[in-house]
Length: 240
Image 1 (cartoon, rainbow, N blue to C red):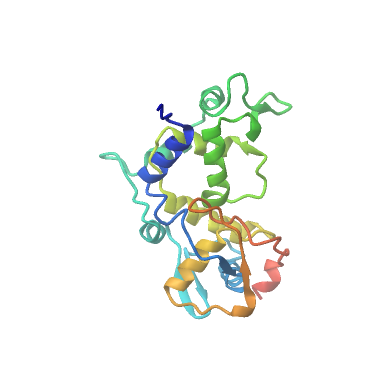
Image 2 (cartoon, rainbow, N blue to C red; image 1 turned 135 degrees about the horizontal axis):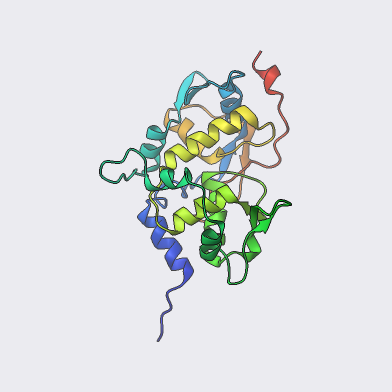
């Protein structure tokens, strides 16, 4: 009998190598207290955009700085000797070669869509390899949430490329930074609801059964990227 080594095997091996299978992609609870998630983001909002990586929810201090998240998610940061940044953080600072990214992420003959100036703009997911598409789905839900999933931007392509190339990453920093961005600049999306609920439960924030909402989660793989269609919230009013 011939046993084939598939792209899913590559995905699973890399998921385990990064320890992303331990907690980052495995929250088993099937419901979200939407009121807690909304309170988390409402209280985190700061009109001066100087919020610390912590927020009070129902009297409890919830920390979501990179070190706290890496410890909680069991996602260790690996640094090269003498370096202060992980490999991906240094790569992310560079201007990428779109052709190099496309060669790794796209099926043969496909690549980036160009804008009017001829600059690389995005890759359609249908033009990506199975492995790249799989990592893109995880990135949409677990690392940089978005509701727009039909294509990937140049920045997200860099992220997926870094994962496939086995660049070590600071997952805690990526998530912490995204939570802050959502709180300050997004008026319609509540990202990382499952993670927020688990963080709150860990410090005994009490849920209200009247505000629980079920969500569908692919087994052992993805966090929910949003809870239903959240209603736009007026942050300026909520902060008064």
